[in-house]
Image (cartoon, rainbow, N blue to C red):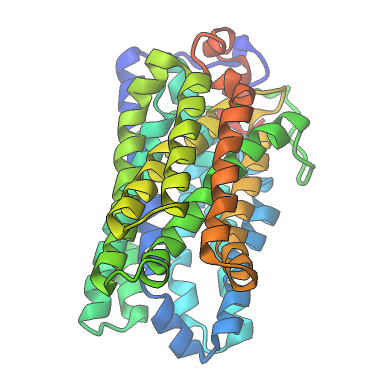
Length: 409
């Protein structure tokens, strides 16, 4: 949407229904990720790849997402926000089938490239529509939407755990999951806002560098996602290797961290509305820093688990607020959202391997010292998310830039 004259007016009730629909889309998106993650060991065995080759293959989702995400705005411009999201989400849910079909490393890398590309494009489209609904409701909802993504990931991983435990072939599991999630996603997309670009608008470029505003916002998202990825992938190892905890207690720390993230995101919108994005992230950074210090200097597994919990609480709302801030920054919000998404995807990709490499060179304690330093970066850099504050963003609430975001302009 180029200006307010092209902004579609929806009733308050219609926008509220659109919020529920977008939340369902986020849940479906998360469920695909959870379904895939639980069957990675089966996929590795089926493709006959080593641990090192698997690590290489798992870089391809981020590569595919980074290349394809800038195209999401052009797709939305051409077909409209609802139709674009419907198509991109269906491609993502159906792409779940591909990795389990791969018989070797080359085909696995290709499958994961497509998997990541469809994930990234649908991610940008749904976040742009989420920002548009948030603007029209004039209250924070992005944290809750990302909380629903976490809920979806938990649902998908729970179903995947059952399938793995019963020895179900991952090809069958993922075909069934893909069909169910595609159907649910198509139904959910019927309720999202159907925003169209004006006839006088120029389509966005196919590929372009992220704007400077996205780089600053993305840096904050990078710190949060790095801490999140490190904690999810390494918390159990930390408790087992550093603090000599049992396997069961170590595994419980990862589950507890994921649950903490989901609960904090679902509850985060009220906190953001009351205190604002900057104060919320700054306070979250202090909590995460405290949690990191508790992990590093922990005398017992229980204290370390509390530290990981504080890390989860502290970083939970940062990425949703980064998307919200990007959606209100500059003349091309969808481009900014794609830029922030690319940076956060990259952070999530490098965090686990970076922690492992640093731990091998030094120790896991030193690795989480780095995580703690990045958590403190949230305190120092929270001001770049000022555009995510409701009062600061009030001029955009009427449509303008936000409508561009949803329309992919």
